[in-house]
Structures are given as structure tokens and as C-alpha cells.
Image 1: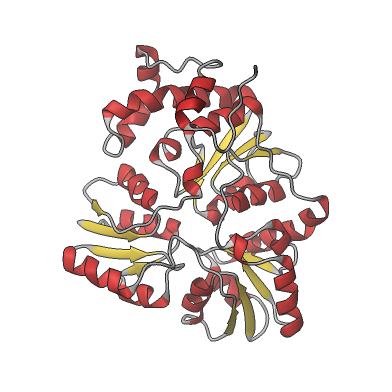
Image 2: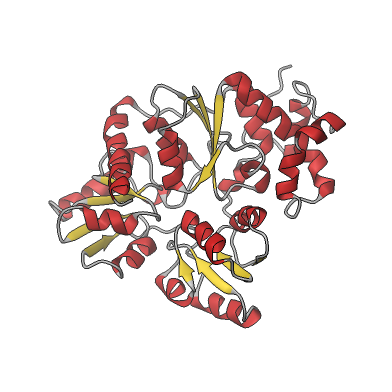
Length: 355
């Protein structure tokens, strides 16, 4: 009987199946090979747990070379993925740009499905894998291509700026994409006094405060960020009066108004590293704090976060299985590739003009 790992396989069973193909015992050789990685994450991953993760990390990195693969990982991935096996890390914009530069023939996307689709759009001749195709996104699922066409009909001639957190089908009927890093710049650079900005209503509302243009929104939201409230920020200030509080612009405007800094995941990381506050609360996805803490000494990171259940579907076990079996491959319908890719490439082009 052939055993396989799928989306519902328990981790304990997945490890047993992987152990039939790979040596997953923690040895002195593996300890030496992964020692530098552990030094980066030792404050986030207890030493007793490292003996579990290290063999998986070792085998993934070995298999990457054999398969001519590169691993792209979003900032919300766990430290063992972010620091242990990723070749490229960043926010959606950084990953989109880096996806155009990879030389390897296989891309493993440690993120959610729309990110893997974006990598495929930018590398149509390469094999793009996602370790768990169930890794979705509430924003991506909040709007369809038909919804976009209906908005175009309602507001004829108004350019459509679409958050990169959307499906290829939605990107294919948009004018230009944006990320939280470049949303304001993209809005200001498209023609006209009005812009349809979809699907994140809070990113659109926060952007509208900084531009003279009229922003037409859609009622989508990120399930990680939409639940934060101004009351949460007030409670954090009371609990940690000396801490700086920073947040992602997918949070509601009243949250953004109450924090010390707001920006994309990349901007938040840069802010912490350059400002180096004694104590900081990152109002975003929980793994962000862990990953930044691993790279930043002298800053006390306090918890004020939510977990993205979709990002956490990606784990070392299914990354190794994905490379081993070359599954799950991301396929974008041929008719969507050119128009969707054009929207992403225009975003990258406009972002470079702003550098």
C-alpha cells in the first residue's frame, strides 16, 4: 500500500510517512548542519523542539538543491520555515518582485494560494508548488471577476486598482495591482480623479485619507486584521505604557489612528530595525513578531496579534512532501495568464518609478 500525505493528514502520521523516504532522526551531523539556523531562532524555538524540526529542515534544504527549487516565504510563515528553509522572504510586493528574478525551475510558495498564483503568472514556464492548496485568503475569496465587471459597469471609465490578495481571475479584469507597501503610490499614479480600489475596504479607507482622489471601495477584509479595535489599542497602551504599537493598514482606520506607526509587513520590519524601540507591539499576524525578533536584538516584542489559519496550513512536513512528490502544482488557465500578469507587471513597473 502506498501512503501519501494530503491536506488532512495529521502531522504525526505525515512524519511517519516521510520517515519511509527520509532519515528524520536527529543526529550530530544534522545538529552541526543546522546549528547556524538554530542560533537565529533559539529564542523563538525551544531547544527541546529543535530536534524535531532540524531533520526536516536539513532534508528540505538538501532536496531543494536536487530539485533545482527555490522557496519563497511570506513574513507570516513560522520561524522554522522563514529562517530554516526559505531562500527569499518578504511581503507580497517583495515576493512578487523576487519571483521575476529566480533562476530555479521549481518555485515552492510558502504562503497562501494567491501568492502562488502570482508566482506562476510571473513564471508561466516554471513549476510552481504550494504545499497545501487549502491555504486561502478571506480577501481573495471576498470578490470574483464578475463582481469587478459589475463595478466597471457601474463606474465606467474609472480605473481599477486591485490588491494583490486576489485570484488570477480578478487580476485579469483589473488595470493594475497594488500591495499594502505601494497602495498610495499606485492610486496616485493611475489616471483620473476617482479610483476603484478593491477588495480590502480598510486598506482603501486608510489610503483615502492620504490622497485627494475619490476612492470607491468593496466590502472585503482580512480576517486577521479586521477584528482589531481601537479599544484593543487602548488596552495595550494601559498594559504596556512604554511600548510602541505598530499596525498593518488592513486594520480598521480607528486602529490605524491610534497606533504609533502603520505600514506593510516590510515597512513594519524596517521601522522596528531602524527605530529600535525598547518595547514594541506588532498588531498583525503572530509569526511576524517571532521572525523580526530573531533578527533584532535589544527590542522586547510583546504579544498583540492574531494567527492566520491559512498561513499556518504550511508546515515543514508538507513542504518536504511537496518537494518530494512535486505536488501540489499551481495551474493558472492559459487565457488568464497574459491579462493578470500585465496587472502585476504594471504594479512592479510603477513601484520602480517611485524608488
